[in-house]
Image (tube, rainbow, N blue to C red; front, side, top):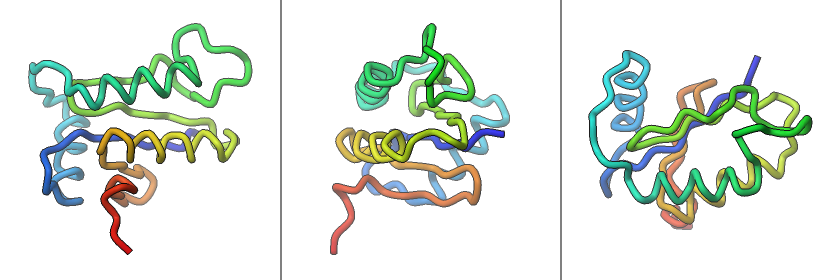
Amino acid sequence: MSFDLSVWALADGATPEDVRTAVRRCRQGQHLDRHPDPRVVQFYRAITATYPDRHPGPNTPWAVTPLHAAHDHVELNLHPTCEDQVLLDIERLAGEYHLMLFDAQDGSVYPPPSHITG
């Protein structure tokens, strides 16, 4: 069983419910034919530069390869035993590229860390 996350490039002001709606559409196979959001492209390139999803080595954190990347999101299916650093890198990159993080285990949505005010 994998630990599943996805990162989403939605419009500024998107709510957690907007992310959940986008996830439901994706799961139903409803994908818009649009150019990839640059934030998604940058995130994908950055995360796979550190953790390749094409011809991964034996210590890959990915339970499913290659990663599912669409115009507005990237799905990340992780081995449950992957190192904590992988999760920290995903969170950091989601913040860098202003992506919302969806936790498929409980439906939680987290805004990019750079958008959280204290």
